[in-house]
Image 1: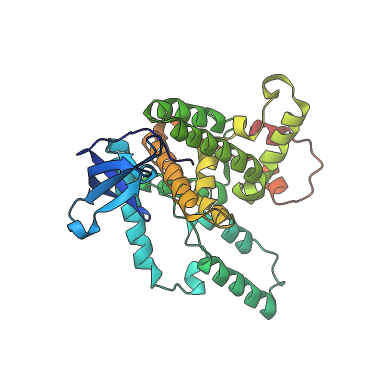
Image 2: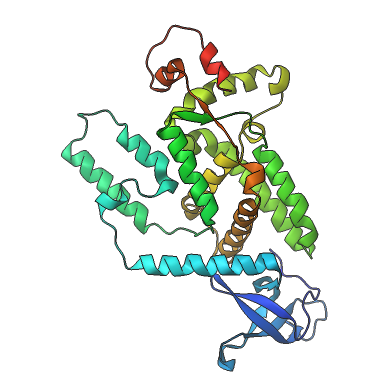
Length: 330
């Protein structure tokens, strides 16, 4: 993102300022052009961090500053809490036994392990699994703020599908596409520069792309794949209400939140520089906080019970009967 050449902050203004991954309350003491001989060069700002000695005062570029709004204060609190939790866990090395399924964000992986074909687990295979799991925990990741109520909804979602043998009623009452459109509509007036608007558009476009590509490969539980197979055929046929529809127009907040739970590992596979990664983390965290505040509006209130026919099909059992019961699920 190119630095802004106009002044968005004033002397003595109360702001929030990034220092590494955390937003701190600060005050602008002074400002100047980065190049004193070029009046069109970007501004930089001398900030004093509240509660810190003057020796920490620092000249910072505009892209490290955020307006002192309620939304940004909420983001600052969440980022600090996430950083503190990560610090506490840093020196705690969990055993392989504890890792087996306690993390709901990787529930699909543990579900696949638990439903593996018995008798295939050789010693070497188990060692390979342990090595893969060890490498997973040492890989770098980008922490995205996940509010507690979204975590709770993810757990409920996992239990409804894997334990209660239910599926989310589809199409969702509010699709992923509509949720993202609503977010952009609400967020755009808060963006004070063209650069910030461009970042918003890029982030939302990226979320759409990730969701489209990740849905059937990462986000679905095994029990949901038969439902997905039926819906995909409807997309391909393009008849009636299913014409011009796809994942973004059919699935909703439950599956979108699963994407954000897996996003840290997906981002870790990219080659973004530190500045871009920090900005991406901030933008994605803003979205999860917004979704959390609006969870009652976007999350489904009912799951559909699966028929015996559907359950058999989801397990891959042969069933010559037509998929009428399966179709009623969606």
